[in-house]
Structures are given as C-alpha cells and as structure tokens.
Picture 1 (cartoon, rainbow, N blue to C red):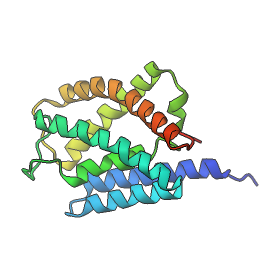
Picture 2: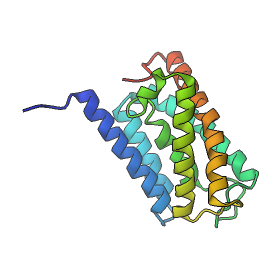
Picture 3: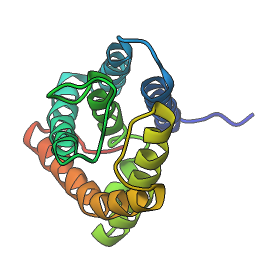
Picture 4: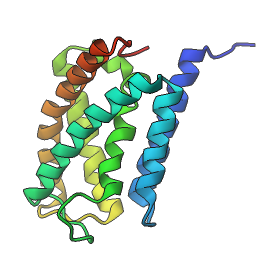
Length: 178
C-alpha cells in the first residue's frame, strides 16, 4: 500500500481549503460569508505555518486588497452594496488566496518570472472573469474585455505578490514554500 507523505497531503488540504473559501465567497449569498473565508484563511495559515506565516499572509493579502480597492475606485467592479470600500467578502478572498503560496502554489516560486506571469494571466483572468459573473458583481465591460484586463493585470501582479511573499518570509525567518 502506498501512502501520501505529509507535505503532499498538506498541499492537497491547502488547495481544498482555498477552493472552499473561493466558492463560499463567490456563491455564498449570506451577509457574513467574509467571516467564513477569513476563518478558513486563519485555519489554513495557523495549521500550515503558525503566527509568523499568518502575519505574512495578512501583509501580502492587504496588498491584494489595496489592488482591488483601486480597481473598484476605477469603476471596474460594481457591487449591489454601494459602499466606499470593497465588500468584506470580496476583500477576504485575498487572504485565502495568499495562504496557498507556501503549499499548493509553492511550486510557482521557483519558476522564472515570465512563467509566473503566464500563470497569473490565466489564473487571475479566469478567477475574476467567472467569479464576478457567478457572484453577480457588475463590470462595465464585456466578458472578453474583462478577461484581457485581468490577464494583463495579473501577469504583472502575480510575480510581484510572489516576490513580496518571499521577501516577507525571509524577514520573519520562515521558509517561503515546502
């Protein structure tokens, strides 16, 4: 009988928790879904890295939230909640996403930046394109234009997030991936 090693099992659980958080945010139609997503990110971060990893996830997640807040102010997202800030459920997806950087997306850290850009362009555009449609978030452009905008955006943002994540991990003296 063949067993799965602990690192592989951790990566699988990390991926499942990310998917649960993403789908909870996008499909969930209850007011406190941001709490569920943030809780999943906390469980994920603490279980697979402790307080210092949680700090790094929080900091890099804030960068993502500021990024989306900028897109929101630019008019790229239209939410039914007409507020000054992003809805918490939307912003909290960043923490669950960044919690994948050390396990299920850890392999991307060793890739050349241009390949990270390709991953970002594909993953970011698909996640935002379909996520906004499923969640009923309005966008001022057609679907194909939205995919192109997010592909260009994440081709730049994803490698920068990875570099920032690695730098923060180095500062707090934890490994950036397993």
